[in-house]
Amino acid sequence: MKYLVFDTGSIISFAMNNLLFSLKDLKTRFGGEFIITEAVHQELVEHPMQTKRFKFEALQVLKVIKEGTITVYKNEQLGPLTQDLLSKANASCLAHHHPMQIVSLGEIEALAATIILKGEALVVDERTTRLLVEDPAALALHMSKKLHTTVKLDQAALGSFRSQTKDVKIIRSTELALIAYEKGLLDPFLGDYPRSTLIEAFLWGLKLNGCAISEEEILRLIATETALPTGKSTS
Amino acid sequence: MEERVKRDIITVIDNLLPLLRRTPVDAERLKELSNHTIHNASIYQDSGSVKIAIVIYALYKLKLRGKDCPKIADHLKNIRAMLKQGRHEEFHRATNTAIQYLSNIDKKIRLYIDEVIKSAQIQKGYKIFDHGISIAQAASLLGISQWELRSYVGSNIPRDLIPDRVSFSERLENARRMFQ
Image (cartoon, rainbow over all chains, first blue to last red; front, side, top):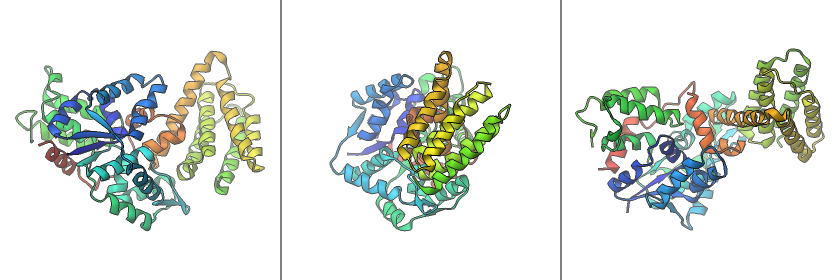
């Protein structure tokens, strides 16, 4: 069985851009399971259900879960691995010799689930988690600039964290939305506008709702994708 | 509470009190002081720094709109005294009382003040995120949801994007392979 694990932010990106509907079809094409963990479920559904502003978005996510498109994963190995990774992640960056808590439970639980399930990828929009897995030196440099103080990496904690996460591939909601576009799932929204308008619309929507995609990437994508004959482009 | 953080909050309040005696109040300086406390909130993630940042930021917004907060100086002096005496529980209570005072300034504008406080939480959450802390952790620290913070983060394009080691093309190719 194949698995694609989602963190909170990537589902929020889809919800805020009215793209949740595409997950059912994407899951069928993926030929496996779409997974969230209990901590992610709490952040996605339970927390906003106690507020007014994003309650309806939470209900929309709940519908997708109840339909079986997304499964909430529970496993007794998850807790210990999550705590282990969380303590290492939050010991890896030091400012004034003080370890900084840079990530929280939900993000790391999603990462742990990806490891246990040997997931195809973790879908995460959030910059800090991605950098911790892929390029912690860049994260430390960024934090040093912003905090006006040297942020050092604890190589022991970081090394151990990276040895456990080295096989994890990360994609963003951007890539997933592009797959939905390439499979023609967004074609009903074309109307009389050119394909470039559709791509521009959903990419900017994702960006303005918090996905870390640059303007340069958006422009490049528009140029690449609209050069191809149809929306069902390169797959 | 870290000694460094404690000293820093006392210094911020010491800088703030003379500002409040001036007419008109230098609102931009208020904003600077609020931003300063966020550095400590990002590093040490203590609730004290976060709350002080919210109090000062809310004060900044109220002053921008010409609202009077006659008793805020007394609240700040009390906060300072509790901190200096090492009475940390009373310090947190005093900070909560200051936030409550700002919320209760005018019953007619209670909703507006609540929005100011919420806006302050979101703004400060964004600042913490901008320093490199994850969105989830920043949201948790400020007591707000990721939904609220993400919608604000998206509309504030960061001044310096960190280049990805994994290129966009590589990520897209990985995604395409998964959906073949």
